[in-house]
Length: 411
Image (cartoon, rainbow, N blue to C red):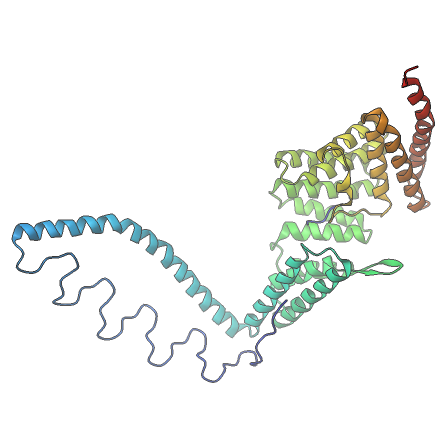
């Protein structure tokens, strides 16, 4: 399963108040000239004051032929420069007009919804804090950063409770929250995040619809509500147009279908994920590798062990013959024992395809993976019997490995 990969304090001026001597936003100070107006007595830009000779024009005593020559030169120069000036004007003026419109809209939004401007500041600060998570790997530091972002989003939400963008960021940060606890599972806020995303959907069903569906799919998976998770992933796929995102979503949908025992449907969605990942031009090779690994597990559980090993070998080949992608950031497994099933198949595939001298090492890794899976899986896990058969197969291969090595040694 894969997830999609310091703020300053505000002013002490009460919300909606204007500090003494300050000019309210959008107002024109006394004596100031509004934007675009021409002060009394001033000459508009581009106009020539009466009695002034334009640059390049000759004095009045110039002969008629000279006057024509100067005038023609001036016109040619003007025409040569005109396109550049026109482009600059066409580029700058709409931008200035858009900025002025934004300022006007913000001013009236603040009048209609006091606290809006302050909520924008808090929103920006919270998003900056979330961006810091990209570089931070220490769990407790990540939790502290998330708490800071959550505090800002919560304050912004209190100011503008009907603002969908603020609610989206609050829900997203809540879904990301994870605080390590010694000797216990990490503290998460999955149910709270589900409530926030559902409230957001009721407020604005179209806002980030594909991402909301995807996030709810992950959250429902974490709390064991697999049918609802599958429904959310399907809903997200109706809005997805990015090939890589489609690959991740199909893979996650396949995973929850496999958890529900629908193995044929799981294989179907894994194959769709593989196709999308390949069409994306390896935009993110992790999507392809994870879809191949997932298909390997589903095929193995369907009884197609040979096809499973072929898919696992292809998955390892995406990153040059390793399976580190299974432990990459943003990748998680439900239940936690599942990763050892994936790794066990990967090691078995490597043992078949690697050089003979490396075979025993891969088999030992496979044995360790199957033993760990069986130790961590629930007693009623439907795949325990199959894992035990794989463990027995690996142990037989390890017992035969020394004899095979001796038979290859020259006399």
